[in-house]
Length: 142
Image 1 (cartoon, helix red, strand yellow):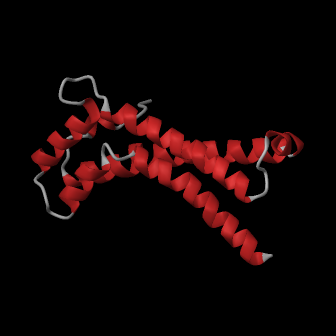
Image 2: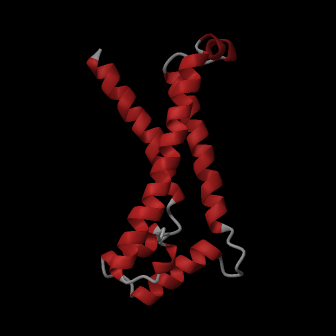
């Protein structure tokens, strides 16, 4: 019984974590390159701008990552429930409360993790490393 709970937790963490990590890939490479000394701050900032805004200012990369992350999240939710014996629409309707609650938990946690990773962790680490992301900070002044 305890092994089932642990496996369920690992499965949920995978469903939640992978899409959130993938969605941060427009900013993560810049931080990693500077952190390990593989690029200068200006080169990493240029890479980050290119990945975030695109070469033409339209910025196709970030929306593409977000769409792929969302599809990965939906696919992970489907696989998660299929592994738990909820394979058909009738099964999902019978256990609708469990499906709805778990799906809302997964979506909320994944979005929160993405926002935290992208706008708190990566922004702050990037600023500490010297990347020009100071404007990304949103401070409420009173």
